[in-house]
Length: 205
Image 1 (spheres, rainbow, N blue to C red):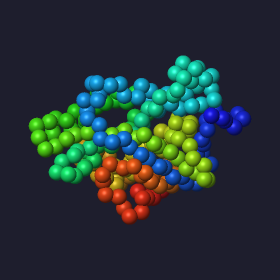
Image 2: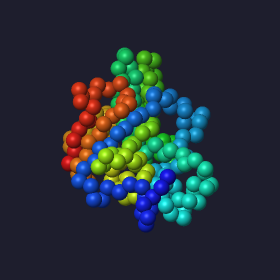
Image 3: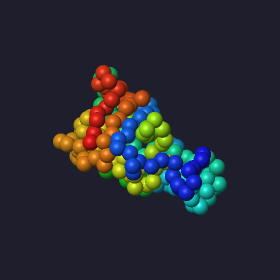
Image 4: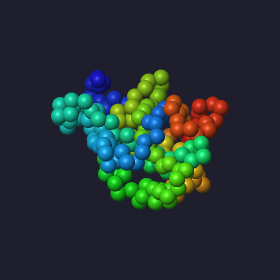
């Protein structure tokens, strides 16, 4: 890992005109995973600091050795009748994933709705790749300053919700949010939903 002299972060979108995001998600995970194994122990905010050329970042890297991944984007999904349907798309910036899910009202409603349906299976997926490409350079979301990472994450979440129309999301279905900069999203590994012929999810901005 190396930084340009005087720059605390590996990535910076402040001067770019547009960018591309590439995403990949885990396979379906049973919700019992929350009780049996710890989820990523750090938040996106922690990740940004740990990947920065700051004294606190150096301290965190020395303490952890290897920086854990915070998985800032996640999906709740229904598997039923050989069909996969996205029920909810969410993000977390300052909360650890475990804390976010343990107090998640929408996740509770999803599980309650399908708990007694023998042919339905509710699962959870985490985003394992959130790469940003600009000017032929690639870096991860956590390599941006936190304010930029927060904006990019919010825009991508909004774009996905507008495209997939998940039942338990209430915002961004009628129209996506006001995007910070033009961008496009490419899904490298999705979750059974039917994608457009072009892997381009949508152009925003």
